[in-house]
Length: 471
Image (cartoon, rainbow, N blue to C red; front, top):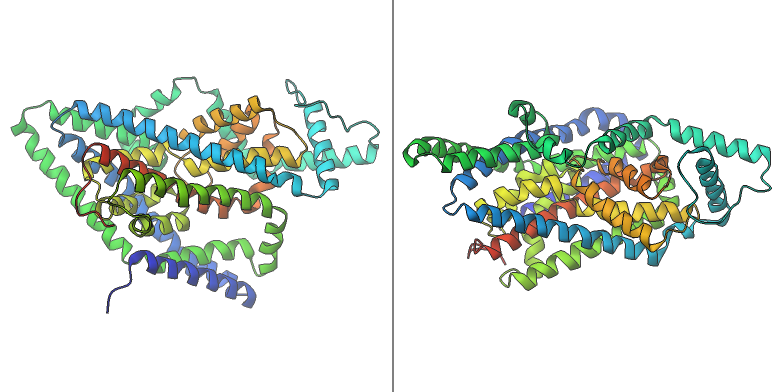
């Protein structure tokens, strides 16, 4: 009997986890699920993160030290960054187009939108240096009771602990200088960088630097180090294989714990949460689906004749399902590298360079979601954004996505920066909190698939796509 493919095993684990969560919420087993099932999902993410950083370190050193033509590294780097920038702009454009066509914020009842508009005007009136984005004024003829109620709602939103925490993080990021990303890229202590997954870019810099240094010393002196690095790299690749054998069970635990935590012992609470934000969620998912099922595979099929539409998803299925489960590009990176190398046929020298950079700077799904979220929040507050303001969103979302850490919900911090760039209340992120976890899972799939797509394109352009690629 033919063994079931890993991505199908993971899908079964996903479905089983959802069924378990629904059953445990209905039967009052939520605490049991959180105490005895969910921890296995946490263990899985920790194992993947444990492997991710050293795998990136040794695979990049191995790839760079194996180059015979150093000029190829610069050419490949320029291609990689250019391709990632292009896919990000395309994703944001798709998001903006859909949100302007569907107009999810205008599908909320008029009374709620009117109250939201007044709340926005009150916020502008009390905020120095911020002006109304249009000429509409609803503060006239407002009773003192209504005004007091709206101010109280604003204060509650502003004082929300989760909102405050993300606003502080966003403020710190905005205070940095224009070249701060270059400063942040160079580690002062590589051991500290290795200890923090959010500092992956520093690890990448060190690995490239180390690999280049090996190329500039005599071959006989470099040989033992290169041999050791290659051996260690093989060990970490084998660790990925070992962890992935238990992926279906771990994914089951991860989904069961996530949904149970959201639902508690009342499954109806999740249903109610999604009712008010249904159109917003639908717009985000539609945009992500368009990028995932049309743009990425379309580009691959056209550029790489040997890979079919169905083959693209079979090859990347395991990484995509894992990305959905973990909501983390960094945690999924070891599996993404395995899928790209073994299934897509990309040479390890290419994938070890392109994929870690993508997990750090390429956030297509996050960028699309930010664009949709900003326009949706403006629409539900009766704020009409001009074309220039929407272009500002494209620019800011593109730059913000580069700074998004490859961990769950980092996009919310960047969303604050995007909201502030067009003069909207950053505390509005509280409105989309309830559905952010599920949408975060969806957009991580796009982030990971975008990385794999660019990696395959770069390998094809460099003549480094193996003939044994799975069709």
